[in-house]
Length: 246
Ligand SMILES: NS(=O)(=O)c1ccc(Cc2ccc([N+](=O)[O-])cc2)cc1
Ligand SMILES: [Zn+2]
Image (cartoon, rainbow, N blue to C red):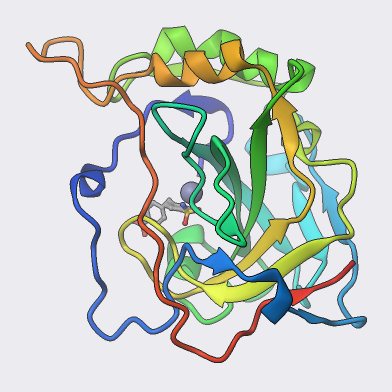
């Protein structure tokens, strides 16, 4: 996991939803609030990200919430639509948001590498934060300013001294949590999802810069806008395990 660079990634699977044969706890899902169960044992999220550029001394830790072990931040990324009408992967009572942030962590108490945790039991924890169009998000602007330098597929730009905790909502007590999967290949069912109840606001112009990114490299004849990079929702085939803290 590199936390020093902003990468323009493509996920070829976006062209068609992927089913995982035998997968019975796939993500994303619709969070049906009235079916979620309040669990007073769940604690507020505790993040301790260190914006130091050198990853080796990062103590970028996530604890608390539904987690027993310590998890380390590996990367963060976003999913968004071609318009403000849709773009998030999860929904709340079918409500769509224009975008969703994922902060991806791996269980550093149980595994020594992210790659091992990806397919391991209780290996990953992803915090999902909904984005809503409103006032400009000052913390996000540093990332938005870096995006034009990575417009094309595979481009990389140095991106240091950024504390992704600034992208979390002020209320880190209220969230839904459930056992699910990665929403892109390898779709492994190793994820404790923590979906924050409170969204963050970003401006229309900030979202427009995300939509200016491209799935294609500079050499390709036909350029394809990087939009609608979300997975279709998956059936909640297990008894509802989503519980609400706050
Ligand atoms: N959208 S999401 O479920 O939060 C998600 C989080 C992380 C990743 C990144 C990733 C996860 C695993 C692998 N892998 O095992 O080859 C490659 C990339 C992919 C997807
Ligand atoms: Zn994601």
